[in-house]
Length: 250
Image (cartoon, rainbow, N blue to C red; front, side, top):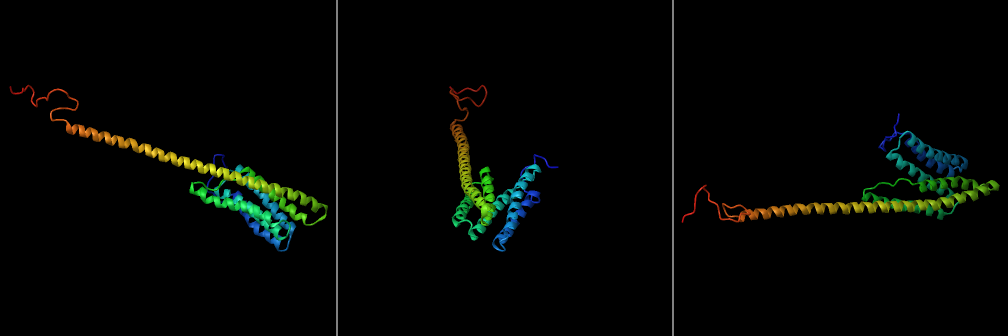
């Protein structure tokens, strides 16, 4: 039985990871359904499965303590691939303009370009924030509605209005989540730089007492070397005799 104390680990064979892999396998199937036979209802079914499995793998990972590093990579990757696939299908079919796809893809490109900078300072991929999840849900809700909007009639008109509302809000929140990632990344980089400066300062301050101790030993050594035989450092009287009771000649 799982325990709540299980940390995030390197496990691979977990139920959430299996669901994420199935979602990834559904991406090319979705694209083929949209661009090949144009079986939109089957494509919408694949999108629905992707949305349900996205929610389910998160619930299972938390309930069964099966959170893993692999799952933290697969989950957002599947979300982005579905967004890209749905956008590509809608653009090719002439449902949405190219500029919408360009705006969303540009945001992901900027985040990917920032990853090497984070790795340089010792950080990996940033965890998905709430705004990013909300934006993904809005976009994944908008795409099925925009597909339905192409069929005309009152259902198509309502789907077009609601679908574009979700698409606009999703795009705005998607970029807002990107700005939050940027702020978080800059804060982590600033903390890493401050930690490096503190480490350098500690190393410098640790080296100074060592040098002072060496100098003190050298001074004491020189002082002992200058002390005449038969006298101790700090003595102010005449030199003592080597033999007890002996006196100086008259």
